[in-house]
Image: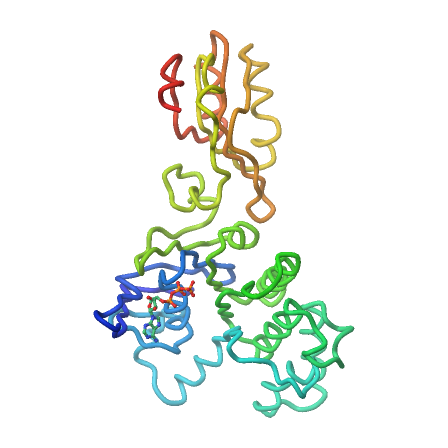
Length: 337
Ligand SMILES: Nc1ncnc2c1ncn2[C@@H]1O[C@H](COP(=O)(O)OP(=O)(O)OP(=O)(O)O)[C@@H](O)[C@H]1O
């Protein structure tokens, strides 16, 4: 478990100090894939560097499994730093070494013996799906493949935590999925806690189970992704769920118009047709859409309901776990939309 308590960091700016982090507190569960998401200059990299013990906060504490990292010194500090691996595109791969050689380099520095080293490198190349490229030079790889080698290199010394700042930066959208899959496998197969920082809500949607949303150095919210999505007013819901962009004219004529968040296969697939049948009403999807959070389908729909028992149908959807976020009745629907 990583615990961040009241972290603040200010840098000297050209005209005035820049507050990069302001009193940020959050928890990251061990073994989770946690995303720090926010716009440019919101403090994501600063937070990642504080977690990696590369940056000292002005105030606040980072605890790793309850240990206050600010109190660490000497050998103990070095030991804890070894548990924290960083995927940092600013540390390029050795151009003159092979893919396998790059992954082996940290193990060589640690004095890991030949057979053990080869076995570990083999395992990691398999994890990142680059076994067939072991003897190639980094220059022969695509940017996405190089990023996967960087991940394998960071995992070489068996860290407990992997910090990836903008892991899909500079990687084509086609290759980004493979990079994220590798991070997911690191968590699932090696038990590593993965913390990634990104501006892209799509990255969080695809792989993260926990998320912190930063804006101008302030934590807007944090928690499990699915938990935050069912809170209709959450910033995560705004960032991660399909937007509702229903033209006003389309809302007219319904007895009820509701916005609803549905989570899970059963809810997304069967709930609305069943509500229509049970209550003898027409249920039309007039906005929003469907997405996936990891493997879980999640929908945010604007529904138009027609029929005497529209109220009952809405109440039933709520009983089944649907979260109604906005509801208007009759002609008001036109105004509210
Ligand atoms: N070493 C530094 N010296 C001065 N200012 C800094 C330093 N590091 C970060 N900052 C400033 O702190 C603020 C937060 O920066 P940070 O890099 O943490 O944001 P970010 O969310 O990672 O942004 P991006 O998405 O652009 O990478 C920015 O205004 C940035 O200019």
